[in-house]
Length: 383
Ligand SMILES: [Zn+2]
Image (cartoon, rainbow, N blue to C red; front, side, top):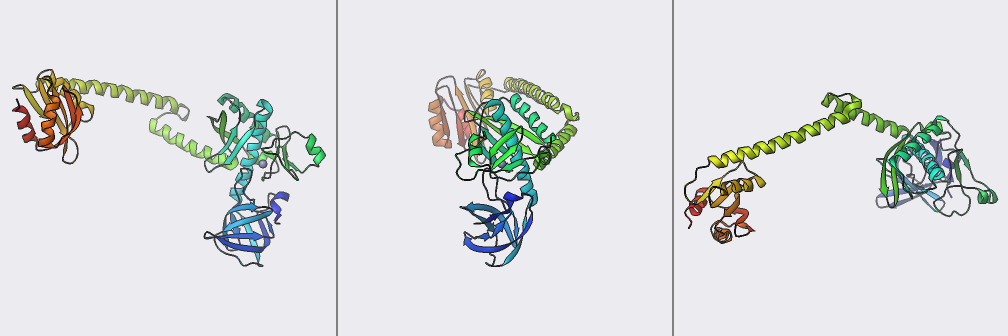
């Protein structure tokens, strides 16, 4: 059984211990000590990282009442080792864990909903709440949660007697056996929890809700606390400042500036479509036509433009084959025949120019291969 130093004092960053076991598993080394301040993953809080002797610890897990450290190299059993936690990582987890308690506790007290899923991810901490909440309601929770920080209340850890526990109201994800560790933020939350928390709410520094989404009949709340919330604020602030420079707008007015920009782009697109249409109509009316069939090559017309152009020309000539560069050796084509022979012409094109595609007797489109002059010669002399 490992002596869990983090349960008595969550602020221990360095300690000495004896290596009790070292096992290799999938290229990693699992280290067991007689005592540890490394918190093993549990209750939504990730396992601790740091160093044990020369070894780098990447993760910590528990098996029964033993705490196992995942190391990058083996350690000699029986040796005394100096150990050090990645304190920045751990303290951030303590801030975020305690922040989550306050938010979940407030939601439970005000709406009666439970936190049914808690995850501390690399982007944010997420809380799955089994009831619907609006963005405004969660905003109000954020304000109250930060009041708890301002009040700098002591966070109390107790292991109550069975009879006291039986009469106590507290949040819990499951039925618990044996000793139950109660974490209390007086006035805000009381919860069964094995995790590590700071001694006072002031150490959480701040709580920021990032998002509220509908999730499995309730909501998923993304939040950050402490140093991570500050870092998130710094990054977002830098982005807004950069955007404001790019748009020559004040930082508080970037939304309006982006909206204006999007409207301008929309107007320009609309004007461009109109101009392109006019240009196409002009080009079509200037097209020299002699005879009943016309074949044109228009590499500027991509996508639907080729078909639109063919439609315009078909108002002036009964049979039209419009081509444009289709990449590689291929040409894109649109063939319109008011005499209703489009598919029959398509069959010939398939033999002569390996065409692909389809349509009806009035219009076919697709791709083909061949010399432009040869295609034009064949099409315009066709009966
Ligand atoms: Zn906790």
